Amino acid sequence: MTTLPSIPIAMPLLGEAEVDAAARVIRSGWVTQGPEVEAFEAEFAEYVGAAHACAVSNCTTALHLALLAVGVSPGDEVITVSHTFIATANAVRYCGAVPVFVDIEADGFNIDPELIAAAMTPRTRAIVCVHQLGMPCDLGTILPIARHHGIPVVEDAACATGSEILFDDRWQRIGRPHGDIACFSFHPRKVVTTGDGGMLTTSDPKLDASFRLLRQHAMSVSDTVRHAAGRVIFESYSCLGYNYRLTDMQAAIGRQQLRRLGEIIPRRRELASIYAEKLGELDDLVPPREPVWARSNWQSYCVRLPDGMPQLQFMQHLMDLGISTRRGVMNVHLEGAGTEVGRLGSTLARSEAAQVGCVMLPLFAQMKDDEVVRVVDALTVALERCRPVSETA
Image (cartoon, rainbow, N blue to C red):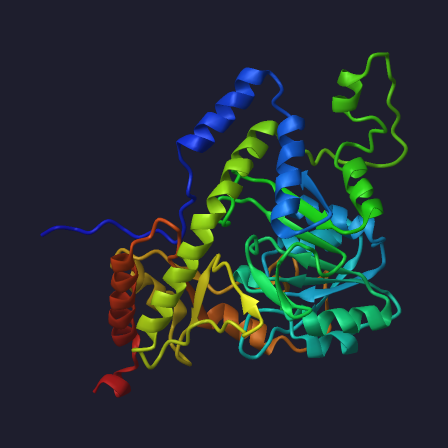
């Protein structure tokens, strides 16, 4: 009997172009933050339509710098979701602030805008909205609320490179940004990867200057400027800064990845359409909803299980059939590291239900159409095996 190879949950699309790019940097002799980083920033800013882009070591450091730049300090509160990777809340804690968790939408995985105002207090200093799994948040509702209260908005766009939103009657890419700052990830599971890495985009030159200062130990003169100078320059360090730089090797890879987006994003959307069509033939699983004003990059494809279906057992059946999956997005307030540091700004029943009642399916640009069919066939088997006896009798 022939055993089919397992289908992974994700796979970065890397090739000889990225190998050559990294080799070029190695041969140049300048391997840390330098000309490749500068070029990557310019190309990323152009891609998303931002005035400024600043590269950093990962999205967590991007979120940290974003919150510092908008003035979050010890004792402040930041409204966000618990239903997200723990890095979102950790960045708030790095500032000495308190994350205030509100619930997600009833039919999605993003923050419920209707819960934001009620969670505000005199200590609220920022809102962090997460474009979860690549699906854009309802910025058209969130931003007027934030502006009415004079609260800056930081977009956690870790998963959202290439996602789009219908804003001001035209399609615009996430990262323009629409809030004050957007933060991206280039982790291997993301649509664009540099191995690891992050980017901040903004329309505000003062915020961009703050990112650039803080990412390099608050050095008054960058090493690139110092090395290019025709006279001796001594730098100074005016405040607490961080070592949040990106290497030129990563940036060179990122530049090649940006060039691939013209094939990566359409293919991911095509695969999501195939999933939606095939899952429409199943009565039990609920596919993700894409609002009419959003175009996801489909960084992840997350389905809802029937009420009461055991998630772990369901995922194990799929693994036995050679299909890799991940559970629904975690909830920070249920983790040991998050149970005592946040404040609940609303009940989190939807967030908790999504964690235990959802499963992420394989989706990556190299995936074949027949592999999607194979995943759906495996879902059919797993559903049958996990049904209560009373339903199958």
